[in-house]
Image 1 (tube, rainbow, N blue to C red):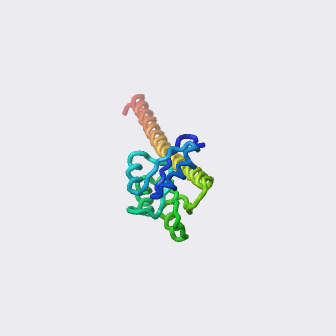
Image 2: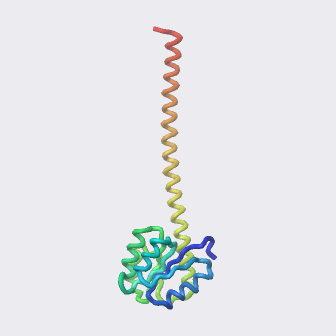
Image 3: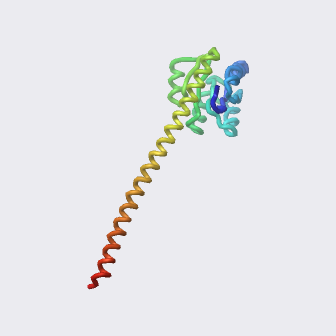
Length: 172
């Protein structure tokens, strides 16, 4: 089961595929959004951020590769899993190069789909944790620099205080 309700967007022009994905994933606790075109998917994503997008490549209008490019441009953390009946090695390589996480060839079973989504969500979680860790490292480095600067200022202040005290005790 999904620990928090992850949002899965299924983008496919075939109603049977959309419904099959919904039936396979909804019982796992995911919130499922459906789009019958890349254009409809882009509208949905503008309103509701998704964690995973299941994206068909061959669709009328904007094809899946163009949609993949736009999705990753909008949010690099979205996990995109390509689902297609036109699987070729070249297409898979091109999709992965454009940022797809996985590539499923139709027809696929519910267990394969669920596993791909679970692994994609884990990848997203790990990616976000890595980004947070990098941000915390940068913040720690900034604080260390400020601490060093504060120590330097305190040393200058102490030296000045000693000089003033010395001058007051022994005027020229």
